[in-house]
Length: 65
Picture 1 (spheres, rainbow, N blue to C red):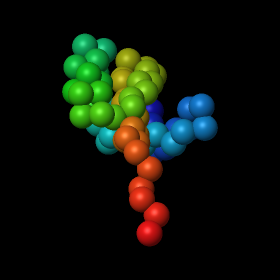
Picture 2: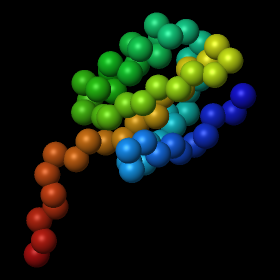
Picture 3: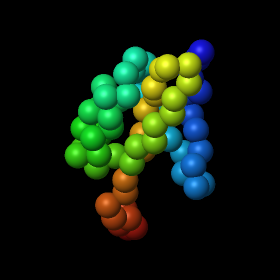
């Protein structure tokens, strides 16, 4: 099965990281790694494959000049 490149969750856009994980354990490890890098992460599973979708968590609004 081919994953979608983009998903929306709670009005937020998440992009597929381009990797197919063949075990939940591998996907969970990478999910935690993304979270440590301040990404918001969603995981999807289909037919024994796992996909991670990420978006960067905004820390502050850009200053307007």
